[in-house]
Image (tube, rainbow, N blue to C red; front, side, top):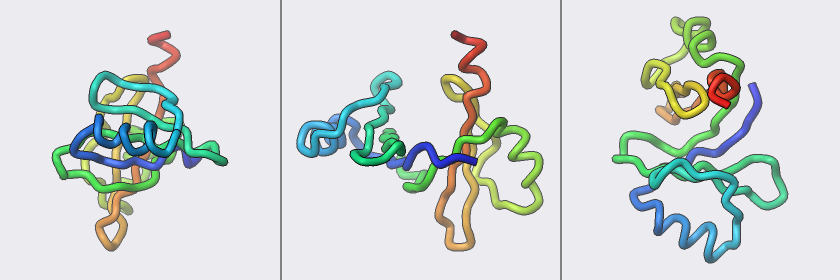
Length: 116
């Protein structure tokens, strides 16, 4: 597992970009349509992934794994997963809750090479 992103759900992507990109000067690393973007955090290799959300998700770390589906299957009985692996551009992602209900996310890039 490698910490890659910090996930930040927001109500409005344009407002979030006005703060993080325009006011703080953080650079966009990539964008996925009008709902998701990633910003480089100064002084670190970790990026802030900003995503519009309906309020169902919470901020949390995002760890890259080789296979979300394998991680999910391996830890099915040990972790409280919030949702089954979902396909995203380039791979899959899922999330599990800690004892306090905080989310930790896992993602893979298992389909990125096949698409490119």
